[in-house]
Image (cartoon, rainbow, N blue to C red; front, side, top):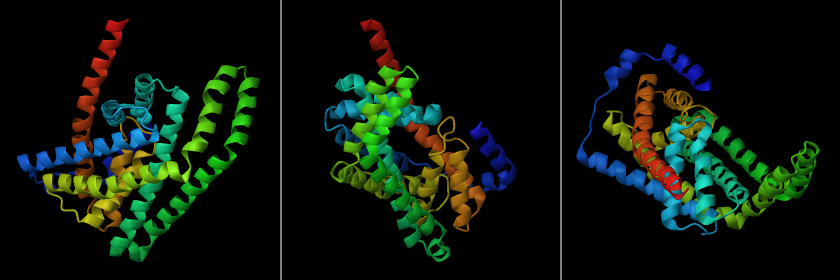
Length: 308
């Protein structure tokens, strides 16, 4: 429903003739090879970060497979469903309780949230237009402060929250859910949100945003004939990532595109360029991650059926 609303709004505010006019395909074997290299490096960083968050209880190959499942599944399923598949797969491969794996997923999302606001701050500082109007600068600063306050609150009040949630669930006759699920997640979350636990994953994530995703966006722009400077790529990355945080099916269709278009408008550029770039990024990342995720998912399911 959310996706349909955003698609309707875009359809009525984009000059589609201009969008087709600005497209100039610049596909070459070299650019495709570089894009594959960048997206492969992104998946590797996701895998390494996932290993760190799970205290290396998952092997590198299994972590890389889980990351592909997550990245590809998020492109195909509603509300970032690929992440839940990644939790399930990781729990089975490493024989870790699902509550423990899920708590580390929550920590990972906090790291994403924290670092994308850092990217927003960096984009606002590097881009003169955005620095002068101050919107993204202030928004990023407030978002960063809010993320830190939420993390501090969860870290130091997890026992109290766990006790309250446990009482409520027991009153609802959901004792097993309380003991094996919510209580365990909240207590494990407190340990996972320590400075020592999130420092290295946050650094890896920030480097991934500013060194890999940003250049992948620039490269996709060149493939479809849209020139992006480095600071503009950070603005688009910041806006698009926020758009993906809005639950929409599948893979942020509509919300992501609207966010990228908004970034182009803030930059004083054509909305038609924004929709072309958003569509190209969405399509290329879909092909790169969703296809192998489907193959892995089919093999995984087939292996389970044979084992049964």
